[in-house]
Structures are given as structure tokens and as C-alpha cells.
Image 1 (tube, one colour):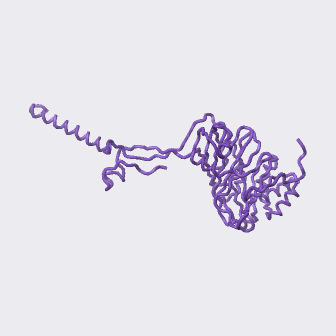
Image 2 (cartoon, rainbow, N blue to C red; image 1 turned 90 degrees about the horizontal axis):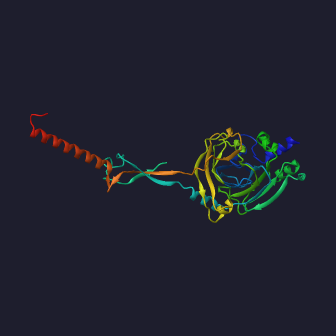
Image 3 (cartoon, one colour; image 1 turned 180 degrees about the vertical axis):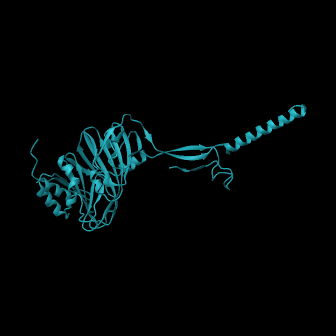
Length: 359
């Protein structure tokens, strides 16, 4: 029975039957599956995670490419999940809140674009920026239509019900992925399966998809990543974490070292971000991470509070030549040095003229 459950769950994860047919495209928080002979790739995954110590909410948005007109996406979750559409304005607000600050940084000696090396005369400008009941015998525990998404919430208690759902949606069975799903089955996780199919027209799925918001109970902050090891191309993850403290991944789980791009207390005010935060102020940690070799991913992300809530914001420096009244400091310094040397030489000559026998 357990083998059948694992095998059937695998069918939700990918339609790949071989190296050249229906390749799988994993993404940071699950797996994206194209239909038929089409292809779909997740170019970028950006997620907002809100955790208050008891409940975790994930709002995710995918940027996809390829020629698939329909696709499915599955995400394992540690407990029963609720799903609804998210608001894309949330990502715009977070982008504004975490913008780098611009700083001027002076330098003394002239550079290639400064006078006298340039032909534009004396400049005081700057350079460019640097850079308790028994489980029901039905696998589908909930299903709803959310915009262009057909969302099914599934368990692995009834493989026949799960098989029927798979056949109705036209997905095939990839036996080789049983190993990837088995840890979730062993931990009795559940699954959110989403079918993406535009209701109007028959255009391929491209660009930014509408965000989805998933909520579930969890006493630890976990971001499912293990399925991303199926990806064949490098993966990129942008993670905004809203919590009581600054957060950090417990380990890089096989990717490059996570990079914090922002850390600090924010006050969202009103709007979708404030509604998600559920408080007047919350600590925001923005994390970027790359996975050059997805096959090395060996776990889900678990995030923990750092020892101190140290704020951080990226800075873009604008280098500019130091000037006084529009005149380069190096030129003033050089002129002053010449004047001192000249005055010293004149004084020495005068002494020698008055006392010719000295020296």
C-alpha cells in the first residue's frame, strides 16, 4: 500500500518519462508540471512568509516561461492548509521598503574621467554606482476555483481517489521520483495541488502568475525546498520573512550561502502587507539564495531567530571627487604644498644672502 501511495504522489510532481520528453521543472517551494509535450520553466520564485510562532502563511509568485498552456504545481505542507489568492501589490510594497540606500563616497586623487585625465575640464561630479477522528477514505479533502487556479488539497490516505484525480488531469507516472516524495509521506504531510489553466483564451503561461496564499499550522518556520533537487537548471529564490525577530536559514541546504539584503522593523500601515503582518510593526528579513546545482539540495529550509535583531540595508555608493568650492582637494593640496616649498626656498635664499659665510 505504501509503495502505491508513494508512486501515485510522484505523478503529481512531474510528467517526465525520459530525458527528452516532458522535463520536470522544480521550483523552490514545490514542483511545476507542464501538460502533454509542452515545456515550462520557473525563472524566479519570490515568496513572503509570515510566521507568528503558531501559524505560517506563504504568499508566493512565480515568473514562468515556456510554451505550456496548462500546468500543475504541487507543494507539500506539514498540516492541513487553506488556500486563497494573494495580492501582487504586496511584492511592490516590499520592493520599495527594501530598496538600497544611496551614499556618496569621496576619493582624493583624480581618476580617468576627472581633470586632467579627461577633456571636460575640472569636475566635481561623481562616478557610477557600485555595485482526533479517523482520516476519511478520500484523497481530495478540498477543491476550489481561485481565478485561473483549480486548487485541490490532497492526502495520501486513499490511493484510488488520488489516481482518479491524476487520470482526470492527464498526468503520467514517473517512478524514479519516489525517493523524493517518501520523506513527506513518512512524516504524514499533506499536499496542495494546483492546476493552472487560463479561463479566457488559450495563451501560454508566461510572465508573473497571480500569487497564491497558503496558510497552515506550524510550530516551526519551514519552507519546503527538497523537491527542488529535481530541477535541471540553476534555481533562484527570493524570500521575505515577517516574524517577531530577524530570521536566518539554519543551513544553506546545498545552495550558495544565503544573502541577507534587508533586515529591520517595518510598519506596513494599510494594504495587503499590513493585513498579512497582522501587527502595526514586524521584523522583516529579506533573503536571496541561488542553487547552482539543485541536485545538491538535501533538506527543506528551516529558519530560526538570530542572536540579535541587527538591522541591515544594502548601500549603493556613488564615488565623487573631493572638492572645495568646486576645486578638487588634491589640486588645492598640491598648490598649498608648492606654495610652502616656494616660501621655504625663498627664506633659505634670503638667509644665505645675509650670511654668505654660512651653509
